[in-house]
Image (cartoon, rainbow, N blue to C red; front, side, top):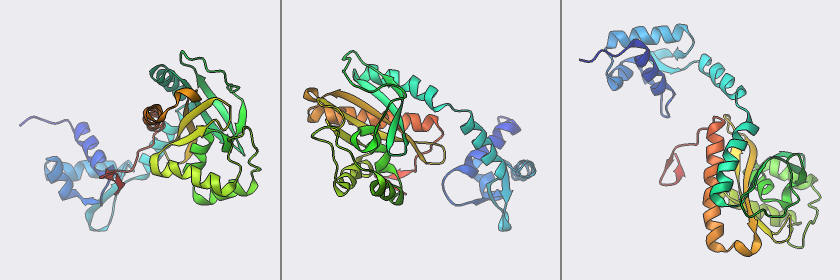
Length: 260
């Protein structure tokens, strides 16, 4: 039988303990991981001393507080702007369109990153610039992913200023519009912030699942037919998912498209 190093076995135990599902007993972990029972008890005892796992009544093993400390340290070491810049350039080239990453600040979005494709769309956006969130795809992506009470608070306080003839200025209409984020993971800006420009956008989450930013792909309105909107929508959801993963977010497991 191949000798498995103790560190490798310990990592396997931690992977099993932190996986989705109910806690398991030491004996069950030993069987599932093909670790001799005596070795499993010894390793789990060492992990418990290091606070990497906790032992509950009945011999159940759960994740320990040290893992939270390590996870928090990892999250602190991640730079949103650096990760977003790296990702946005690749997405802009792939989509041949302008990519923005922005965060919500009060009633506005603030652009953190802007990368252009070869189209060089004439837009007023710039890194550090602010635009009312309700009129932008990236803002609506963030709003649509907020908890219901936070979205209501935004709608209660924001004047929903009109930027173009297409800007949504009715709170109920905006609420209905951003519902697409929950259904599809995508928000749409159809010439609402800039005439002749449309975009698709998707929310970005951090390691705690909080909405911290949004990613958008913009193109000229006459190029945004239904097929292009679907294609860019898929790209922006993929990009937002990748950036979220880089920030430590783990999406809930799904079964046939539904959360378990």
